[in-house]
Image (cartoon, rainbow, N blue to C red; front, side):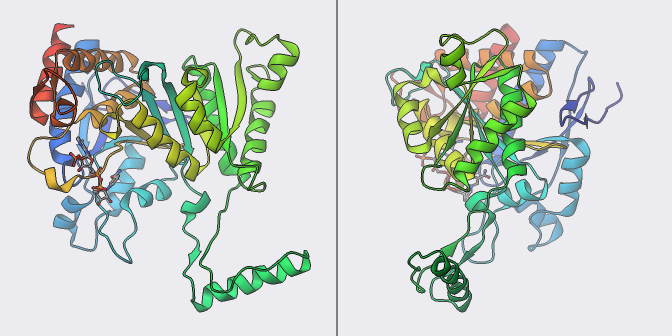
Amino acid sequence: MTEKIITWDARGEPVVPDNPIVSYIEGDGIGPDIWAAARPVFDAAVSQAYSRKRRIIWHELLAGEKARNVYGSGNPLPEKTFEDITRYGVAIKGPLSTPVGRGFRSLNVTLRQKLDLYACVRPVRYIPGVPAPVAHPERVNITIFRENTEDLYAGVEWEAGTEDARAVLEFINEKLKQAGRPGLSLESGVGIKPMSEFNSRRLVRRAIQYALENGYESVTLVHKGNIMKYTEGAFRDWGYGVARDEFPAQTVTEAELYENFNGDIPKGRIVIKDRIADSMFQQLLLRPEEYGVIAAPNLNGDYLSDAAAAQVGGLGMAPGANIGDRCALFEATHGTAPKYAGLDKVNPSSLILSGVEMFRFIGWVEVGDVIVQALTRTIAQGTVTYDLARQMERAREVKCSEFGAAIVENIVKL
Ligand code: NAP
């Protein structure tokens, strides 16, 4: 069996051979523990789903501490890592630590920006048996598409009291004066919130495509356009524009639904609606079943992703993906939890479920289904890591590696 490379077509979708090379980054802290538990699960699931017909060829990339050890202390993200992620098209990673202090850019943000991974995708689904803080976590089945490249994360800021901040404020005050509006305090810190039509539209386009391909009934544009009209409000307008211009036969707005279709969604279409961000948090708690895919600008998407994950049991179980038009990077959503590093203790589910998303993304849906079934069965058997055990009655607490092995055992029995 010769190994092959995943390529990407003009629509930004992967073209996958039966034996693709998939890159992985172990990550820092607990990264090696969770990767060691997750990889056998992935291999066992591929083998269970396709026997010998398909196989992943794993290819390690260096980043974080491992890269520093090889390339020197100043190089946690070597150029070869970027090149190989692009070359092999699909990668999966554990968490990477960002040293605290000035001058250190988050490695995760750098990866997303340099590789133009413009959509941060966070599916939020309940795994039966996982302790959750709400009465009906099973009513949540949403996927959040968060814009990943701009908004306040573009990092355009000036510190209060500096010469640059004052110069920017003086410029703004001149514009405000011309508009007859009161000026800003020259002692303020300043941050700029850029949001563009190009980036908003490509994010919403992916969200609509995903909703159509995965049987969701709606895409909700979440924004704070009542306050920030030319950024968040524009995001909403550009989002409706994508639906109208590019998917006229497959979408219907909420207003049209009631005006023309008596509130019944026409066959083959999805509903495009919008909600103000603060109301969306309430809606997710009170009426989660009314929402499928959510598309949001960067900051709102960040808040919503973690809040929604908490509703179904927390970040330890939450998968994540960063997707662009020429590569995709799947990742555990939690951090490096340094106090547990090397103890073989933590929950590998976030990374395992990120793998599920990766397999679904490359079209190996059966592999994802096998993993979810086996993971669900393992938790139902009460075999869990410390984080879930401390919230469950009659659980059998196992190590990180033992939890992975228990999932593999259940895969083989499916
Ligand atoms: P963290 O590493 O996520 O850990 C916070 C707490 O969350 C842990 O102490 C633990 O709680 C729980 N936790 C995290 N992962 C878990 C797992 N797999 N299983 C069970 N429990 C888990 O957050 P942090 O301490 O704020 O960040 C540490 C480092 O990670 C920082 O350097 C940060 O920059 C980095 N980070 C990286 C990423 C990424 O690579 N995507 C994301 C976030 C943070 P208990 O103590 O209650 O057991």
